[in-house]
Length: 225
Ligand code: AP5
Image (cartoon, rainbow, N blue to C red; front, side, top):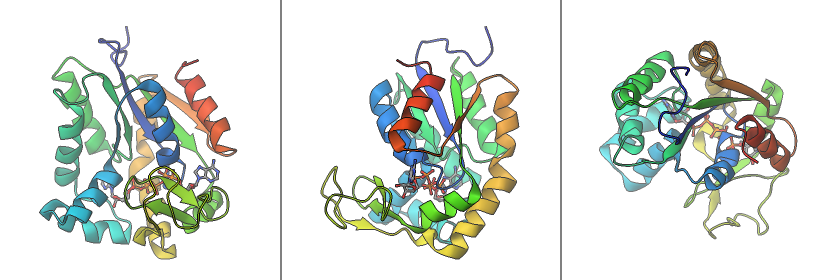
């Protein structure tokens, strides 16, 4: 058995991909299908900011500029949500890990409990498409569901189809922050592709096409009917 195969039958999954690849869009459906919690580091930070917590305040400047929030803050915040007693039946990570230190910390924390990541899926989308998607994105303030002004608009303008919450444009979807985020992904996060390839636990999926079609590709990569 590979060191990453599930020892408990639970799905412990990572969605990897650049900003705008569709991780959040797909994670909402996938987590429902697999019956695991969707744990998105960006959503956790934004929730802290809405609540005005010290953690949220510390993260704000980094996020607005499109830089990574320091590891010591990020790792503790995410691990708290995915290690037992929470997430007993697995989890779907979105936006974490984002560099080698985070990936190694995650592996060590899981290994300490006899667990491992079961699969990482890389969603691949060309840079020009990422910029188009992020520039037109709207997000629900309440449930964080992403929309796009042109490709996936809400039924009623500025109102979330799922929960009726208000839609807004994220500050880090401004052109300069988008450029920084894509560069940070290439410098810091891309090395994780090799990291997860080494253990044969990485699948790569084409992220261009209709949302439902990509969801089918992801389920296929996870071998879910
Ligand atoms: P985070 O919130 O994680 O942002 P991100 O990784 O930049 O990812 P996005 O949310 O921008 O994109 P996505 O892939 O989820 O795409 P989405 O589904 O929304 O992080 C924000 C910040 O928090 C970071 O910059 C950093 O500061 C901090 N942070 C977070 N995690 C961290 C960590 N681990 N370490 C340190 N710092 C961290 O889709 C995008 C758009 O495309 C939407 O409009 C959507 O409707 C549209 N779309 C989706 N699919 C399709 C499709 N198939 N066709 C056309 N349009 C589509």
